[in-house]
Length: 143
Image 1 (tube, one colour):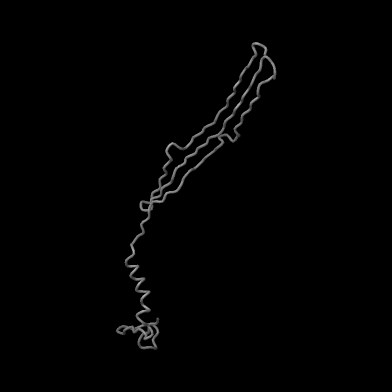
Image 2 (image 1 turned 120 degrees about the horizontal axis):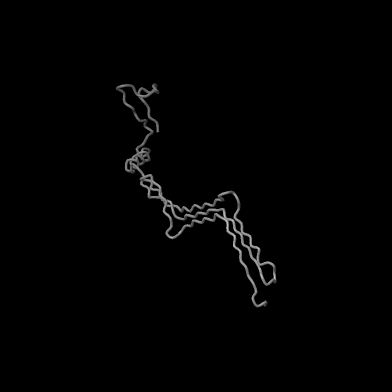
């Protein structure tokens, strides 16, 4: 497909008052793809419509507050096989755990995002502190 201007020696295009003449090698069938594309573009919507997007959203957070690990120590019963025994259980907690399962929704048209948690789900665990449990056991009958 070539377009030639008249006169034929001028390659800059037609001057004022001159017409653009199509060469004889161009046929109406060669214009069909361009015409089809022009029609499709004219009939296409001016903006895209998108449904809101939904994706799983389940953040989890675990943090040591002071930087020390949680610990538990159990001395078990001592002295063994004695009529009077003592047991010590020591626990030091220093952690916070948060789980929030749900889904995130993005509305493309309104350009908004919202997070909705799953009903009855989620967990907040706070284990901060120090406990000392002391138990005494004694044998009354000597058995």
